[in-house]
Image 1 (tube, rainbow, N blue to C red):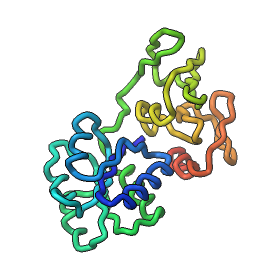
Image 2: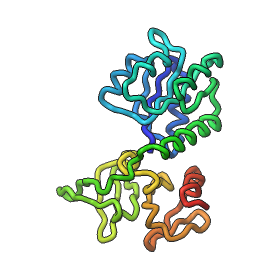
Image 3: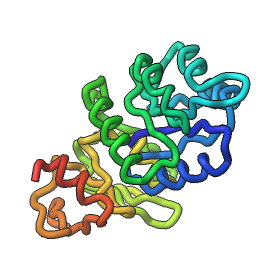
Image 4: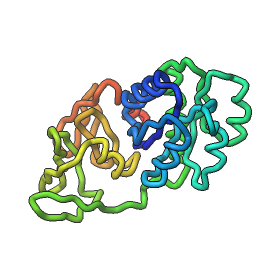
Length: 227
């Protein structure tokens, strides 16, 4: 899961980008900021993987703001002015979106972000996580997780030997679980890809259970499974 921060001084642009990001199965919106100053404060306490960053902003431009960052996440610049594109790419921007932004073009940009992220370090060295359930804290090996299932304000974590019900959300689980070892296949399901036995139509077989693949998740499932 990719944690993104939206930075744009135009309310309508912020709304459009937030709507697009929330509709994308691989994005979690960490925050929405109206200028660079607000974004700086956010990043002090909550680092992100991706900036959706407007170039033309008052006081401090998006380009200057990005140059100032010591730890630089991936960035997709957004602007209504095409002449800024060259400078944006000189800063090694992952992509550059010209307003008004269509969803299909936004989707293409996020695919570039995902591909670039997979070339980096990733989360694959993580072997376990701590989960609180039944007034206990469990040390759970990632390899023992079969799949996670949404349950209102809780998540059912199905393990090899038992099921834990924890207070969490599916988006928070995707932030904690490494990709592509764990893949969200439906708004209500995250699966351990090593436990997938088959894909038949829109059904995944996982440890004897059939799990429906949501329509918006089918492309990412096929990409990970190589089908």
